[in-house]
Image 1: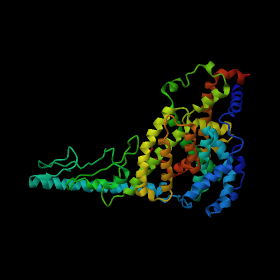
Image 2: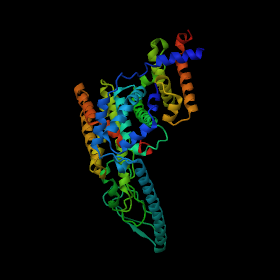
Image 3: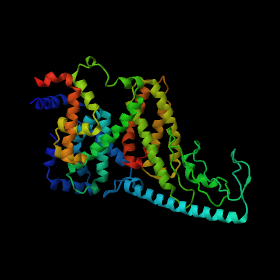
Length: 288
Length: 191
């Protein structure tokens, strides 16, 4: 009996929990949906997506293809190193020329026989950018016949790194670009959500958001210059995102509520959040 | 309330509507939207507790539904399918928002959450809201859908893709936790 009473009591009291308004803003939401859909190519029905390259299935298969290609390349490289070092042992010594431009690797050295050169390049260079990511590794200036090459790109304030291809013409840097784009958009979404849910009087938060937005702004520009921006839906999204990020960066501690309202207005009018959310595939690909 | 009114739409109607949407009939899209938008918005609002978020989630739900309706296999009703998209979009969005809010909250504020003396929160509604908010996603979702919005366990099961028994178990757990959280108000329901 007491249990029944409690259930009744709870149901009644819980009606006030997050009570929605009597009327849903149907027209506003419908307009937003239409705007979003009009911004991109017509919806492809039958399991397709507005962005074929970013659909979960196709994106997933690209990752598998990329992984398979990387595995084959890795194996081939290993065999190559093995053969090369074996032949080195028989020949006596191998001259290894280090890249002439960077500090510790600037001088040419001759190493004893059997030494395997370190082929990793720029994996933790914070200045390395997205647009250069896929191509930079081939121009490192390391003369060698073996060793794997890697390059990386920083994914924002957390410094997350994404492999951006193998530096070989046979690899698929496009999938790396897609991954970088998805991560970037995820982070941008996190920033904008944070911006919208912050306290209006929290100036310290504004400063932190500004710093975060500055990080994202540079990557947004780099993505705009990368093949990712060839996508007819993603380019306008990145451009709108860039505009919003600039506005957030320019928020000073003394900025007025009107400044913030302008950013909110841009977010609302361009439906940036909705477009961001739909541009980010659900599941592990989102990279968060 | 629940989905009952929507489930009563015959599956023939749903099939016709889906076929028209897939064929690119704009009026059918609007019809589908009008049919479900109120329920989706109510549910997302209950879960989010914020108009902006509820709008975002509702919009994202329909955008995804329109994108993927061609792959809808009819294994559940159209209503259940759309609701499951809505819940999924909302919970994913809320997880991010919650993470960010936690990150934003000053440390000392975080330490006092849940530790306030009872006298400081005499209001039942506020206490209840906090208690519901503190439930885990799975318990809170089932509780909100069942006890607040009136969905049946069968509907919740289809929407969340969990067995009916699990839905009942989650509701039981949620109520138990709320009973403990509201122990101070026991006289109100005992009487």
